Length: 68
Image (cartoon, rainbow, N blue to C red; front, side, top):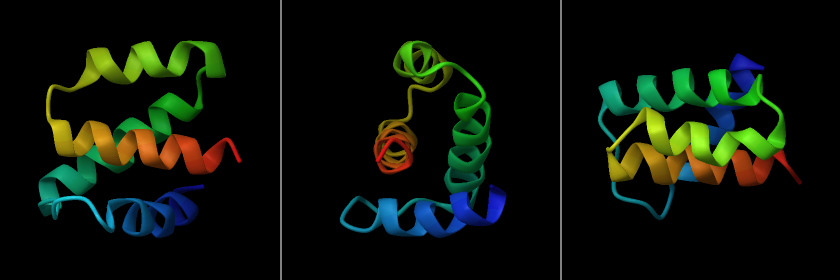
């Protein structure tokens, strides 16, 4: 899943403000942790884990892609 997350992360951040390498690492970490949760708990979990708008937007985009 990590490789899929990296590829999806790159795609999900297109059209968003560029993320720093540190933010990208946080996106991967948060996405992986969130995917282990039931879908009904994911949105609240992500919102509690970061206040960084770019990270939050990228994780939400990844989750939306993952749910398709």
